[in-house]
Image (cartoon, rainbow over the protein chains, first blue to last red):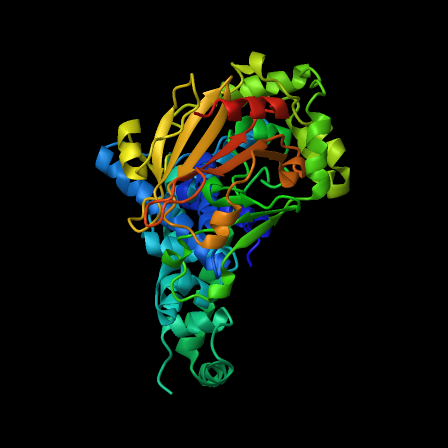
Length: 164
Length: 338
């Protein structure tokens, strides 16, 4: 028996966080997470965590493909709107920084980025492999590549920022 | 041993190497300066990369975000979905949901994971008639301003937000009532301006289609809310081997309403036997605890005896209303489903 309510309590927030980092859009992240749980109700997952994250990532990809087909330009990289009430300067700096992180993440291939984001949610190698349909033996190298690329891309973004 | 590759070193750092392998690699590292340098480099990159990812936090936090969040987000907890196969077992406090197509999702899994049950506390149901006649309190100025600001997508003016959030964080399950008091109060008719469902901003994960196409896909007539035009009609899920499910989005008095209809193939006997469930309505306890005031209602009925060998027409409706509708208005809406 799977209690979807309990799954929701446990995984909704990490799922939205991962989707937010993946898409750069908080609203889309919440929509996609809700869609994922709607599907979990429809087909109770046996191994919930990899299942939920795999479905969510598939939805992101499906959505991306459809928008490409339609010729709609998706705003993939967008500074998240400020939601608290920090001082304007602080807010600006924070948004700038988030945009830099999102641009840096966008430099990674889908697979590298997803492996990295799943790791950030505490997935172990077996779970990452199950979620992304990869061989377990490839996870270590994937993470090394993803992290290097992210660090390099972020440093580039910082340089550009300082130069401008 | 030969020099371990970077993937293996990364596995060591992540504690993912089997103990015997880890011991071998460590022994090698003790005597191999180049590999030790690579390991240190990997560790540095790892902590730097993880720090970069952590610069994208989820704030404000989602869970218990409370009134402000529910005003901004039209849909919240859709966990209790799939109305067509939702079966209310009369006289108990459990709502059973059973999927007839889980095989397509659960290849190779244990058959005992068949159904799922969501607890539906008895007191929850007893409360429904009690709350129905109670007139909702008028919206506070702050809540109204907040909702309006959100509807306008203006991110600057949200006076009530931090306070509401703080309150939500403190609210534990036993203090549900208190959390609800902080939520925006129930309004149906005058709320038209409070929500604006802008399709461009909404994610559509289903395929949009015409009503006629949706009916072809369902193999039966599409139930609609009489007098209203859906904002969108989508077919879900996209997978070819899944049961056809059509989802309609409506905006009723400014409140997003979702109507889900699914064509069921011949269901299992026990499902058939229990499928003649009455219209039911309940407030979702988790939403209440979160200070949200979503209403959720579902219907499952069947057209009596199932003709043998033919597609059994069961239909159900899932309503998820947010924006603090009084329960009786959900009932009223249910009656308009034709």
